[in-house]
Figure 1 (cartoon, one colour):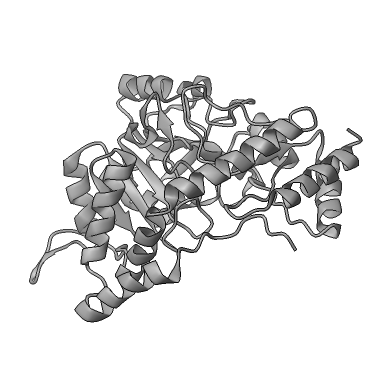
Figure 2: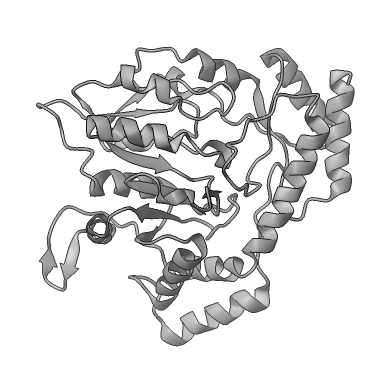
Length: 366
């Protein structure tokens, strides 16, 4: 079977050199030298400051919320955060886990990102934050969202799990918001097997987060506040450093494959409208079909022909029973029923891409 994605693995020779150093130092975790090196190199590569490495992307969100004091109650009631229902479940489940109520606002039908026009009507006295998602690496309307955040004194935390290396108007997209979080899961463009990062706007928030990820401990006999263990270890950092050496080539190959798909499928499927001022990282190849039945039929047809595609994102999160949601986000629910992501990874052969395109076109009669 052709998988929907395949993790990029760096050369063993390069990785082994980093591992040899770990064995020599016997320093495995607690802000080891490779974690420090990866932090510095990622800040340089991404063009950001105040970057904190953590053990996974979900904890990155949770630590960002706590560093910005979002879980604090308002008048004895749980805080609320306005977010999108069209995203991976971790965006919402991380809020609920921290005692924050997700309040869903619908998405733009073309970009699939949180629609700024739907945010203000959802604001209540309990609202403390906006949590938008750069869906499939596409930039949200960051200027409009920042204006709303400033107007209502709300913190903005971007779930930028898909936006590694994406620039907006010549600078890192990760610079927007009070914080932006990244996932370094094995399926991402850049990964550390498991892992993640937070980019903070302010150094004081970074300093607080550093304590939070290490149990709140600040000295051998000092524990300042409630914390958790969310530290990245040296072996994760070693994978990241080895991959970072290759990342420009990885992103270029993925971008080329995505552009090839889009060019061939432009008249067959609905494609995501990308923000005109961003660079692409080739993270995903999402396409929308005319109906859910057509989508399911095509998924089965692809599977019979040895191709794995994924319904992503599905379902729309406003339909989950464990979230106390009172609104129906019609656009998100509609798109989530008709969308799938096609295979893409750095080593994907163009003959396979052509096969997938032919299958889709033949099935759709185009």
